[in-house]
Length: 164
Image (cartoon, rainbow, N blue to C red):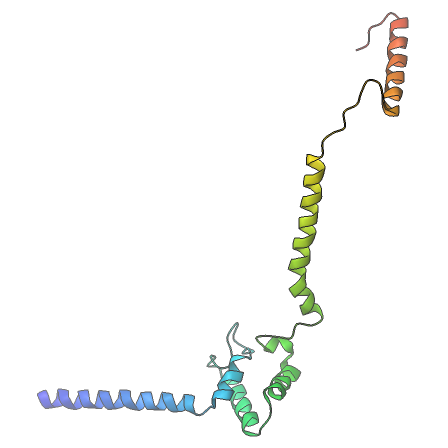
């Protein structure tokens, strides 16, 4: 029985070593530049995963296309432009900040600025000291209100009724 365990153990070690070599070769088949570019491109199928990390068939095909274009001598920007033309700017992990996307970058700063102005103006209004009215200088509004009050109270006292 001991020789059988040794043979099985040796076979297991050889199998693990072969699997490790096969996995290393799969990653070595792409250049470092291909892997770098693949990390900058979203997988169209997987949510939030790059083409380099995805194991879908489409991601493998995209990595193959990237590798072909790298071997053909195309620049990084040309390769990215190729995928943007096919899938749109949302394929890139870091899309260019222009147009509507530029507004999305500036919008939080604008909202914070407007909010700060509203808070400052509110605080200034609340902390402003009221101007005291002196008896010597009644305002026009006070004179009007006083005349209306005399008129109403005068009419009520003439009838002998008390105001309610």
